[in-house]
Image (cartoon, rainbow, N blue to C red; front, side):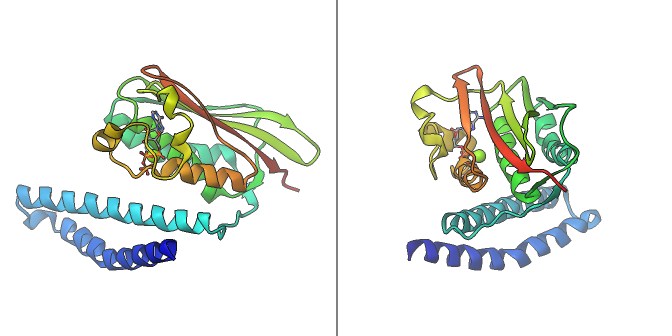
Length: 233
Ligand SMILES: Nc1ncnc2c1ncn2[C@@H]1O[C@H](COP(=O)(O)OP(=O)(O)OP(=O)(O)O)[C@@H](O)[C@H]1O
Ligand SMILES: [Mg+2]
């Protein structure tokens, strides 16, 4: 009942937010007739309303995942262009923090596999968002490698590695739980809800897979998982 209430509320709030986002967007286009301070305020409004929208989407999506109502698609996916797209999405944030964003894709990778591009993008995005968020300097890399080919499937390994703040040993187990963050000051310093990795965890179990992490405080973190994708015919 509580989950239901939460998702109904989120849904209503999100609906109410849409016209706000629309109007703010229109206002922002009136650039020429705005004073600099008005423009600044509108930018802030745009940013906050988008953040709120994403947050509500996350809560809604998580509710749906938890209720077991998310099903994976199986369509041909070009992993090279998918990873390229994911990298492109995160490039602006990485550049802003002067982080190097690296993509490493095995040359032996199959051209297409059968999978769910939306959910795979979501998994990689959540990991990359974290890697960038928790890294002050250095690099963030996304790698995809071919582990094994069987008559029906390709087994692939995905890795997101960073040179960021790392995760204390005692928190490593909890970070995949919902609303859990490594330390109390994480919430203050980095914001967020603590849903990203819980979503990754649930999405990977739909793929009969799980996520692993290796991390050293102050040195960085490495998240990785394997997925067996059916071959396209
Ligand atoms: N790459 C990383 N480096 C260091 N700490 C990390 C990294 N990824 C995750 N964490 C730790 O794990 C916690 C949980 O991550 P998760 O993505 O679930 O939540 P969040 O990023 O805090 O919030 P949200 O994803 O909902 O915006 C983070 O708060 C952080 O403490
Ligand atoms: Mg996150």
